Length: 322
Image (cartoon, rainbow, N blue to C red; front, side, top):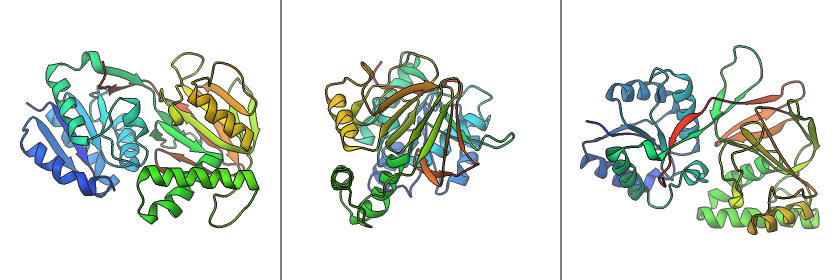
């Protein structure tokens, strides 16, 4: 009997070192069905096959793009006739936000061992519901892309700067993120614009249906259905709407307020100048070539062609801590 179906992408950066160990572990555990894909367009066929073995848990082992494509296919593909097994994500990508939100971190093999243990003993106490973000152009009939974490405005520009300028240096993820943060603070503090520094964010309009509009330049724009944001910020689960939005004005004082408030876990407990927290089930993002990144994939809003975000119905995920 198959307890766990594991979908791996050998070409993801994290798998270059860990995949041989993953393959060896799976070879010694016949209750794990291991399927490898090298391109995201193979994921649909992979889940057709996985559905036939009827696993108790589906585990995704790949980078951010693999996770995003897998979530889209699982939600829209109807391979499981509306009864998708709980989903787990191994820590593999550059940010691992989904894995961290589910309590999955550290060595992927140890995480896989724990997931297999839960699958054998019963998953009921470990299943949590998470909505997904459906991103589209708002046109009828367009097929949305699904994910759980969107970064926009200055945050998207910073993520692209880190991806294109810092990661190629071959440094660790932690050091790369630290250098990127210093570059952002330096550019804000001294107002310097140069090719070796992150660019200034473009003006953007954010419309929350029924709740008004935000407009301006933002250093940070986050929309998520996760319970934990960057810097350990807890989003919580209550309030109107399923998507949580945080926008931080493009100013050093606003960023410093965000940093200190996150350390002392004060975000959301009182209103802070320059930090906007909202919730909604439909969000429109408009701007002149304003970039957003949904779970590693880049999209761009332009004048007259907004990005529209909607929350989906809940999807089951596997959380390691009951």
